[in-house]
Amino acid sequence: MTRVRVLATTAILVALASVLHAVEALIPLPYIVPGAKLGLANIVALYAVMTMGLGQALAVSFLRTLLGSLLSGTFLNLGHYLSTSGAMLSTLVMYLASRTRGRLSVVGISVAGSFTHNVAQLLTAAFLLRQTGVLFYLPYLLFFAIPTGIFAGLLAGRVVAAYPQAGARGR
Image (tube, rainbow, N blue to C red):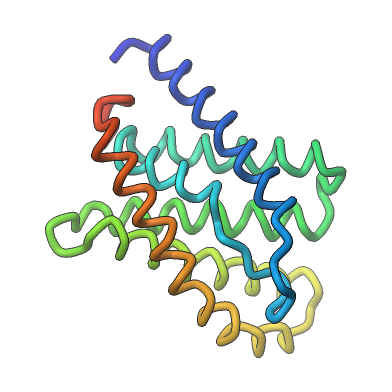
C-alpha cells in the first residue's frame, strides 16, 4: 500500500469515527449509569486494528478524540483526558488481542477493548481527581461493557468481512 493510500484511508477512518462520536453524543440514553455509551467510534478503531495495524489504529483513535474534544469544547479538560486514555489503551489492548486471532473472535476483541476503555477512564479519573472512590463505579460500567462490546464487535466484524482490503495490514 502506498503512503498516500494509507494517509487517505486513515483520514477517512478518522472522519468516520469523528462523525460516529458526534452522533453518539446525540443519542438519548437513559442515565441509569452515567458515562455508559454504545462505543460507536470504537467500531472504526477495531476496524483499523484488524485491517491496518497498530500505528494507524492508534492514529485514528487519537485524532478522533482530539477532534471530538475540539468540536465539543472539552479540549484539555477532564472529559478530554478520559476519552483519550480510554481510546488509546483500548486500541492497544484490541491490537494485542487481535494477535491471538485464532483464539479470540472479533466480538471477543471488542469486549476486551470495551472493558479496557472503562478501566482506563476510571483510572485516569482517579489519578486526575486524586480520588480513588470513583473506582467503585467500575462494576457498573463493566456490566454495560459486555453488551456494548458485543454490539460493536458484531458490527466491526461485518465491516471487516465486507471490506477486508481497505487498508494494508501493518502488523
